[in-house]
Image 1: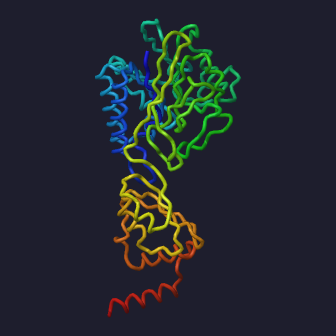
Image 2: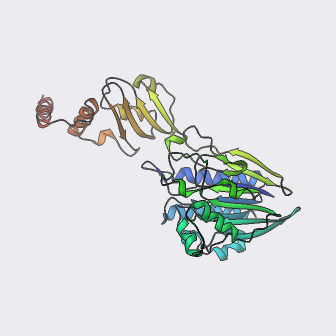
Image 3: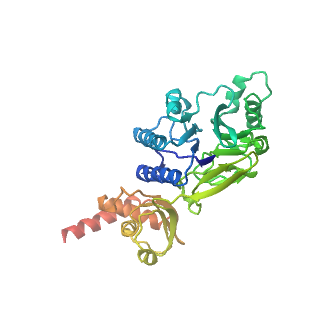
Length: 372
């Protein structure tokens, strides 16, 4: 049986202040085409469907279109909620959509939810384990000794209906010990919240979500798909991918990474103003750092003629090392002359704003120039 493993869609997420609806819609189209072209029987979505627990209408519409498009092509779907999701919102109408081959994790009852499929090698069991905290497991098993996330997940697996002599696939959204974080995950992960990968070793494949960098943990068949888009500048060198998984006979699981082209790349650009202005025009989402000692006040406006989607602007020279966030909705031309002067003064003086004497001098000079 062939699976396409994806995770961490984060529909509705912004990059800094820029909404990514268009990029996410194109990404979902790419994933649909990828599933169809590679003849996937099933798509596994390992949590963090949305960026918010109360997702925007646009995000919900994108997910609905994505799931419907795959179901219409007779591709089954298995979906779990992640730590960014509201489990109840994600599982809404779960029992109804199963009739269309869409299996969504329901309210956590202390066990994995098992769905059995069949192929030429017999039965294969898919286990859904949405994001769980230690406290949630302790409520289900008050008599068990549970103090860490490893103990919590082990408790859930022990009480679940799992026959390890058969082929089993687990879909989970947890931090597995040894995983490498990126800049766009929540940083509330500690040692008590990590899960020892060895307790998952009985599964033929473990489809993980939570970490945004594609990677294996412990072995090749325990794997984070990673986010399909770059959601922070720390991910600029990541190669985003989906995981194509072929589960044959028991013990025969093959994994292949399928690169996901980015609608707009996320990257950093650094150099002198003159060098940057000679770079090819690009609509990538960029963080620009200029290294000139003297930076004209209209530099940001100039650079947006080359990089219209500049999201962050940094001055790196001997005078200052200040980061200014800008979005593509900002325009220097919309600022009045005094605001431009304050901005320029702060850039040249280590973020110090001009005092009343400097402002009075500027106003006198500006009024005199206007009167000429």
